[in-house]
Amino acid sequence: MSQAFSEGDASATPSRKVFVKTYGCQMNVYDSQRMTDALAADGYVATEAMEEADLVLLNTCHIREKAAEKVYSELGRIREIKRERERTGAEMLIGVTGCVAQAEGREIIRRAPVVDLVIGPQTYHRLPDALRKARVGEKTVDTDYAVEDKFEHLPQPKSAEIARRGVTAFLSVQEGCDKFCTFCVVPYTRGAEVSRPVSQILAEAERLVAAGMREITLLGQNVNAWRAEGPDGKDWGLGRLLFRLADIPGLARLRYTTSHPRDMDDELIAAHRDLCSLMPYLHLPVQAGSDRILKAMNRRHKAADYLALIERIRTARPDIAMSGDFIVGFPGETDEDFEATLNIVREVGYAQAFSFKYSPRPGTPGAEMKDHVPETLKDERLQRLQALLAEQQHAFTQSRVGMRFDVLIDKPGRRAGQKAGRSPWLQPVIIDERAGEIGDIIPVRITRTEASTLFAETL
Ligand code: 5AD
Ligand code: SF4
Image 1: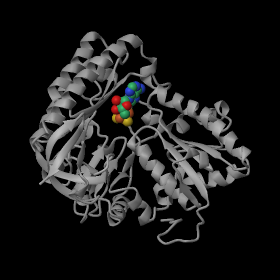
Image 2: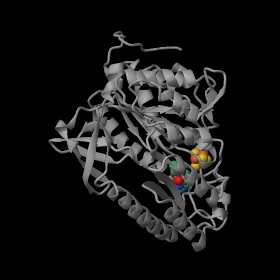
Image 3: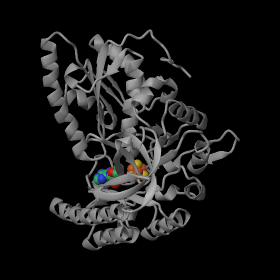
Image 4: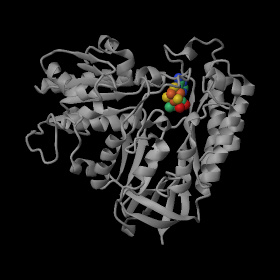
């Protein structure tokens, strides 16, 4: 492995500052951290203030139309800040990374000439090179699907830097998607499914735990499609990987996201049954409840398959909290189709969910379909769906009152005298600050709720 910045390396002089703004999903949060690590080797330290940054990176999301438009308006604002900085003689380089970079490429520099570099999600290990060029006035647009493995080329963060990030970490194990749901840009922006090798994942997880991480969330656009050869020479799936990760001493909690119903295999369900460190929470998007719409979306399963799957998962792990994603107003969606979505929500009972109006994405089959649903109807349907999901989320939160369970303390509370943690089902839990230290896992009893936050007393 090429290790550009090793533990204890004192040669880099941290003279420049980088401000990274992250849009979109958790994988972008992870990628932003890895980019920050790559830049640390180049002498950059992270800053929270854009005004004092020598380099501004927007790590972007392209999943819905508004996300991309937000990037262009942010670039307009940054241009003004750059002008201010230049008046004082300071430099400010500007980079766009992530999925908008991948999808729009050179178009970004055409629309926003202030941008110095455009780098897609598969090549951000080449960022230091692009910066060297930018400093001599040469712009870079790099949206290749790199042949080399970016993870092999990325420097590891120092353990002090990992520790600064808290006690919960993301770890990307899989990227890209081969499912081609007809509404989705991911197969185009993130490319084909790629799984990281077991040895790389274990080394990264062990490193995180050694630096004090108590919880790791495995990430992938289609995380449960992860497959690789295990050290035993056998083909491992995500379930097997979770069993192995659960053996790492000190790693108290495991999670993974996002999954596709088609890839929930028996071993993964067994992991939910057998591993107490695998948290009872599953984000398993169904998107819609009508078989006709599921087919048009190319989801490759029917509503009944999804319900049968949830039943198997709940048999294995009865207290599991379900989370999902939903799209309303996919082309051709009738009132009856929409009712079927409400019905599947009622049948499952979600603890938490994300719901969106369908947004046509250029280049995806959905955008070319006929019978687009009028915006006002999408609004109306989204409101109804969100009201139902909010009711279910409220019921789930309420049902925790009086329960006893373990909480991982992960940060100081917002108010004086408090600390905050997470329940096994991912709700924030507020406790007295003397209840324990950050990183401790302590038993509590829930006394009351406020919106989706739980308040607890220690036992
Ligand atoms: N329009 C609306 N929502 C979308 N999603 C993905 N593509 C689109 C789109 N074109 C939603 C899906 C997915 C989540 C990450 O974003 O629900 O699961
Ligand atoms: Fe997009 Fe997920 Fe479908 Fe892949 S499985 S195309 S990432 S919605």
